[in-house]
Image 1 (cartoon, rainbow, N blue to C red):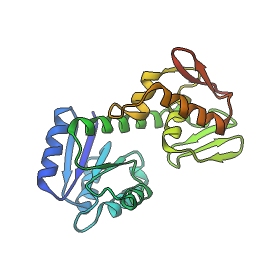
Image 2: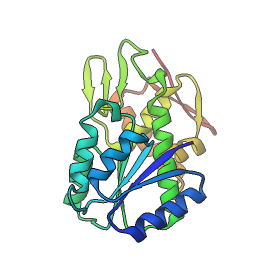
Image 3: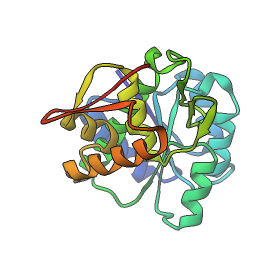
Length: 224
C-alpha cells in the first residue's frame, strides 16, 4: 500500500488532505514544515510527498532539494501542492527535482487521479526492461534522457512518458486506453488524436522503426 507524506504548515489543509486520501486507501503521514518532513522521511519512507512551497524554517523548494540530495530518496515521488501558480514558481519546483506541480485549489477526486497517475509512472520507471536492453536504445528515468545510437535526446515530458511506457514492455501492444491512463491520467480529457500526435512527434525524433501501429488497438515498441 502506498504511503503519502503531506507537508504543509496549515493544520486545516493537512487534516483535509489526510482525510480524503485515507478514504481512498492511502496511508498518510503529515509534517508541519520542511525540517519536520526530513525527519518523517527517515522514520517512514513515503512513496509520494505532497509538498507546499511557502513554509517556515525551510520552504518547499529547499525541502525538495534536500530530499533529492540523498540517494536513498531517489525512488520518492515529489509533487508540489501549492497556491503559488506563477510560472517561475513552477519552474523552480521542477528544477529542484519535483515530479509534478499541482495548483490549489483542487478537487479531491482530481488530486487522487493525479497521485495515481504519478504512482503508475513510478511502476513503469522501475520496470527493469527499461534499462539497457538494447545496444542502441536506452532510457534514463532519473535524468529524463533517451539514448539512441550514441545520441542523447531530450524529449518533452509527455513524449518521454509515452516512450518510456511503450519501451517498458517491448513487443507488447499497449491499448489506447492504457496509454491515456498512464501518461495523461484520468483527470485530463484527451482523445485518440492526442496520442497519435505525440507518437508522430516521437517518430520524427527517433525514426519510424521503433514504434509500430497496431490498427484499431494501439502501439507497441519494437526492440532491435
